Image (cartoon, rainbow, N blue to C red):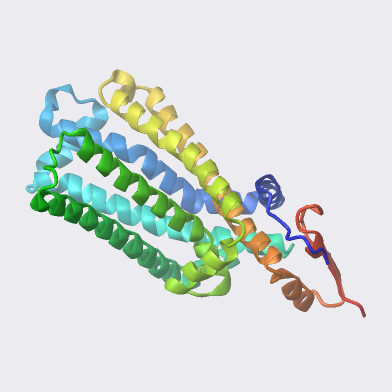
Length: 337
């Protein structure tokens, strides 16, 4: 066994996840069409549809054919002011449910594909029933913690401002550079804390699916697996956050342009919906696959994977898909007869 601590390599993990997806391309295509494509389509269409609903009330004379359709629904509804709220609520529920479906089924499939086991669509769909509620509970727990943290820091910020004003050292003017500088400092600190939590909890969804845990336990387990590999996990998080951010920025700008143009009347609108939806579907698929493979590599580095493979594949020689230079003491497991 090597005395040096092995390290993760993001390129190796991405390459391994691509290999698994390519080996079961039709399986992951089916899961993507079932769960990820509806999510991506909803994310792509929602800003445009929301803008159309707003235009129905502000400028009904300048509507295109889609806006006229939403205007008809708008006029048939007695509670017009609640339509954007109902649309937003339906959007959040739909996207959340289908995202959890996708996470459960794709994580299950990548996990079994990593071991070289047969990956079956029916088994992946069945895994949704066992993982959905634990994933939902874990997601709610993480959101409660982060929301509570935001409220605590916001309360601290307001308390400091009130104390400074009451003591009389200085009077905070909300337009003064001192107030803006302090607010920026608090915002940066909050941002860094939230990013750190996201990095530490990055593997929580995989832990829920693979280890059948839920609530706070997957968050703690993810933090322990990430320990010592935070830099690679941060790189992975920033890598996909960058491309996702570019996508959302471009879609928001494009939706505001399309809703005020004649492109809604031709096939250009369809292309500007389907192409980004497809790209976002691929981005989500690779994110979930890489996240699952990273979980396996983190377990290997912590010395947890060799015994599992020895137990499951006893009397067989199993070569793990690790870079020899990165995980030298877990490259393979040989079980003597």
